[in-house]
Amino acid sequence: MDVQKLIKQQVTTHSVVLYMKGTPQFPMCGFSGNAVKILQTLGAKDFFTVDVLSNPEIRQGIKDYATWPTIPQLYINGEF
Image (cartoon, rainbow, N blue to C red):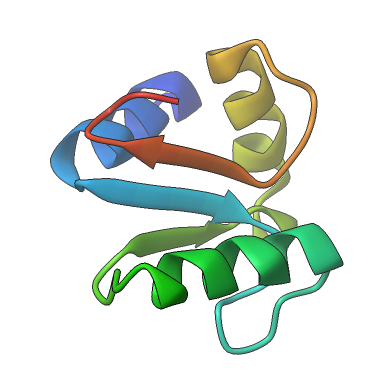
């Protein structure tokens, strides 16, 4: 599947999507860790996460999708 189509599918089929470095249990950067903590503090329990470090195509693809150069990126109901 095309990376842009995959990203669009992810952000439109999940109400909350966090593209981050690492996982919620083991964030690989402070900003990603803070994003997870904020979501958890706000009561988000079933948010969908994507570890961009494990997939270089997604890592670049999400930057292109949002026209935003940094990660983490948070999408709520499809909106960045």
